[in-house]
Length: 267
Image: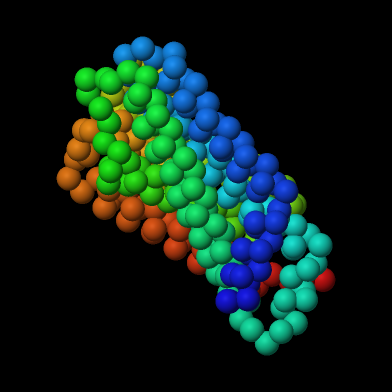
């Protein structure tokens, strides 16, 4: 497993797609400073909001591209047959690749988080707003939540990659999964509050939404930016329960991926 972990690092860092997406992430965070210039009253809050959104997008895209390149394309090119020729368990391949990508995402989140942290301080020089954000532990907890979100998406994409025979499917379904998981909480709240009296919507889409609640994780629970943006403490147990949800889903997806990869036939 160690060999697959190290090769994931080397291939991931050398990949042109990673370099392009990382540059995109840096540009999105740089755009946060420009957005702060258009806010005469709350530049720090605007910079944080825009920057965290850009970081979330960049890390999710990195995770999907890494899964496609390091697992999906290797299966398509039959490169995995060479690995499987060695007397090692197949699970080592899946676990090593996933662990390498998770650590790469962690390093990327730290670098992008540090850049945004510096930019928010710089934006504070524009105008000293009355209610400043929390750039200590709340900020880094928010960055951790964004990283954990990306790891959940990566685990789902790994599962799809081990099941699919189409290389692009992990990227496409992974993106759909990320969007659906991020939107699930708002949709559930909308229907639980009566959908503004639209009983036809509840009757038509209600069963599907209830099913989705059991199949998809609510990734919006990993978005803790309110804590850092407005220095508003989160309800007790929110972070613990959200992390437990994410870790449970990661374990489930990687377990399915390992089982499917063990049973897969490579011609």
